[in-house]
Image (cartoon, rainbow, N blue to C red; front, side, top):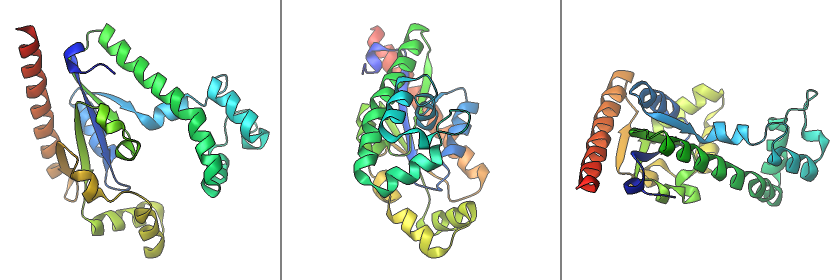
Length: 217
């Protein structure tokens, strides 16, 4: 993957933990003019009917994972693969290469358009997958564990034990934050988060301008 010296934009990874508010922060970056590439959207696109990954999934898991209209029954497929780790690995082997290809194509398109600015790659498991190493900079959205747990309970309508289980299944946000170039604390109100996003955005733009200036000399 080409680094910033070979392209006119800064590629920034955006990640966080469950219920930390990553999607909210992503929307704020979009409003500031950043291009957002959402890993969840790419994952949905590669399994649409007619896509190679869709055909491979039907061949592997059978027609039971399809809805009446032929679209993938994502909840049923999810229940299968999360109950059987070996089948989850098989699904990942089918989808992940296609997601990476689509991501690379988006970057190529932006390079061809000579887009100058910030490109945000929004992905929940960026650190766990190791893909954060391919980013120019990494931004982690964080909250304290108590806030994260209460937001998760309110969002999903679950109890304390289930919220704790879901949080424990992920890499702790505090550990992710140690790898970040910028941490956005989303434990406060929206205005406080927006102020942090604007500061990080300004810092990223300044860095991009400095790099482009250096490469032009």
